[in-house]
Length: 258
Image (cartoon, rainbow, N blue to C red; front, side, top):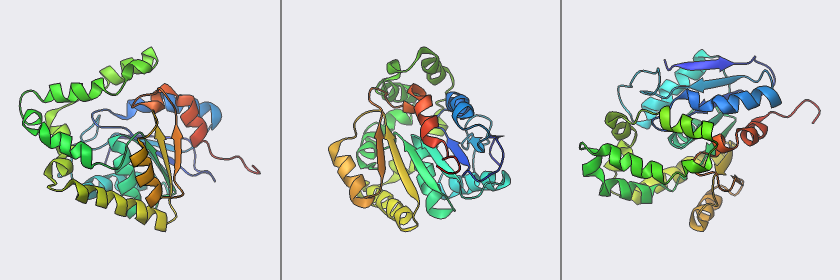
C-alpha cells in the first residue's frame, strides 16, 4: 500500500488522483489542493506518494505493471471508482499507463511529452555517469533546464527542498528507458497506450509550460485527434506550481445544471 492523503467526500463529481514527478512527493500538490478547496470544495482527492518516494515503500520491481498495480491497490483501498488521474512528469507516464489497464475517467498529463525516444537516447549517452558517483551532476543538469526560476519563490523552495534524487530511485524509474535498444519501440509503446485510451473513450488533456515542439504536437494529435492541449507560457516544467489556481479551475467539476 502506498502512502496517501484522502480529502473530500464521495458525491457525483469524479474523484481526482494526483501523482507527483520523479524524486518528489505528495507535498508538491499543496498549492493545488489549497486552490481546489476554494473553487471545488469537498471534492474527493487522493494524493499519493509514488513507490519509493516520500513515505511509500520501495517496490519489488520498477516495471510499469508493478507500479500501476500498487497504485490501483491504493486507489481501490480509498474507495475511488473511475477517477481522473493527474500526473506531473514521470507521474504522467504512470497516469497514462494506469489508464490503459484500470477504469479511469480521464488523464491529465502535466508537462510530460510521451515521444520518449530522444530522451532515452540522451540517458544512454550519460548512463556511465548515472551509474557512478556523479549521478547527481546529471540530475542537476536536467533540473537546470526545467526553468525553476519562473516559479514563485515559495514554489521554488518546494522544488529545491522536497526532493530525494537517490541513485537507486532514478535508475529504477528510468530502467525501461535505459534498457531499450530501440527508442522507436518506446515511441510505439506510447502510441499503443494513447490509442488504447482513445478506443476506451478516456479523455486526455496535456498541459505544457511552453509551446510543444511542432513535431511532438503533430505526433500526439495524429494519435489522439481529440486531445486537449493547454499551454501556460513561461511556466517551465512545473506549470502546476506556477499556476495552481489555473489547474484547480481546470480540474473543478461542473456544477449541477451547468
